[in-house]
Length: 139
Image 1 (cartoon, rainbow, N blue to C red):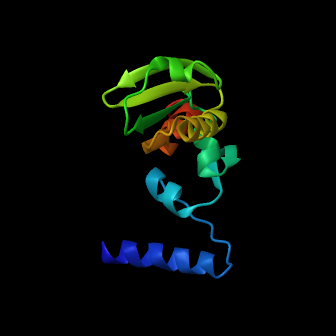
Image 2 (tube, rainbow, N blue to C red):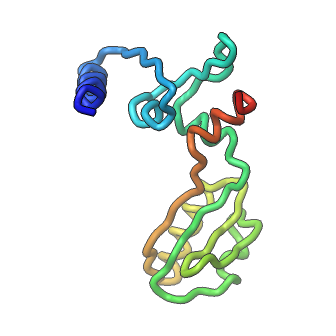
């Protein structure tokens, strides 16, 4: 475990100092944590290249944000802003949208206008492993 941590720390330090580091790994989460650009290789060929977030978002089927307010709110507040559906999930609202960026900005403006305190807000986030499986067909 110590040697793995030493390698990770060395890779980070080298990258912080401006070096380009090529890392080959089967550990998807390690690649997600360490890499700014990832190339996925399947059957000897590069099939996709991009940042971890870009690769993950390319396979995000359920675009939504989850938001919780300190005060109770009604579904009618979410009738605009590119939101196609609003559902409660526990104490949060799940807002389905084709444009999460626009919806987050809409919710921030809504909270300001209605004097609501946002307790939490998060966009849906597929994992890099889910994107890898989609890209490689599970192989």
